Image (tube, rainbow, N blue to C red; front, side):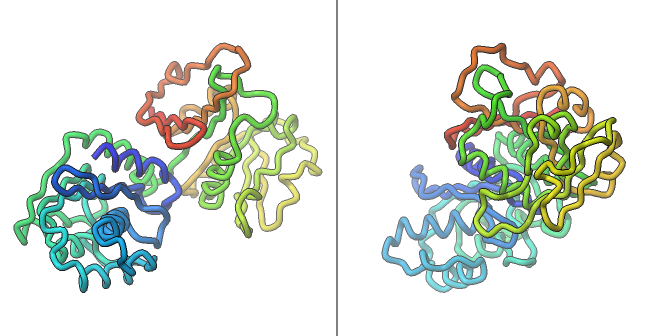
Length: 327
């Protein structure tokens, strides 16, 4: 289950409006595959993991050429030959029980005759819940993992999206805690952030940062991207140079305000800034996402936990470390 959790965190927020979910397929204590849901509308974590496991067991299979959920489901149901009958699948979230943009994962697992299913968190979405009952009704062994508190943390952004809105603060620092002096993280991390920017409703940034850094705040690291977020500049001073690049992005609304009232009807809000802005807006923040580079400027490290946040996951899969914290 921990492998599935780690994999899901690698795509946290990128699956909006869907939850980040990971899955692991195991046969005789051997891990066949670990995968996750990557983007909304694409195959769910279970489907990706089952596809990868099938290819491990059948290296010459044409399944590797299929990419859509419907095609993968159809292929597996026609060609599984009970290959998964002794397999266990670990999933961070109860397999979906409904047909939406993609087919039901619970139905697929049932059709493939998995021996055992271990889930992390029961699905809180009434439209998708009920997968475990579907599986138990055909005598598939179903259990809930002892790591459910970790899978609950993984689901936090999705829960907030469903309830009202989710606000997260993105902070980039060097390993010593310093945040000034130009680019801090790698292009890999910058690209990751640009992917998230294409999904958010509003990006909040402090007025001082805008005046000093003169940022663009676009998605230029993504090929052919034309989606750039609307901007709320949080500032008491309305006097900001309109020649700053962020004002010259097409199809973008830029607001300057010392109030956050304009985000009340928004669902997915990102704040980018430094320690001062974090301390100012900490009461509005659900999750803190910190990119930590290996660079060092010999300054004292900032303790975000002193602001009431606690670490819930550390992603070590990329060059820069990503630390996730919640209130």
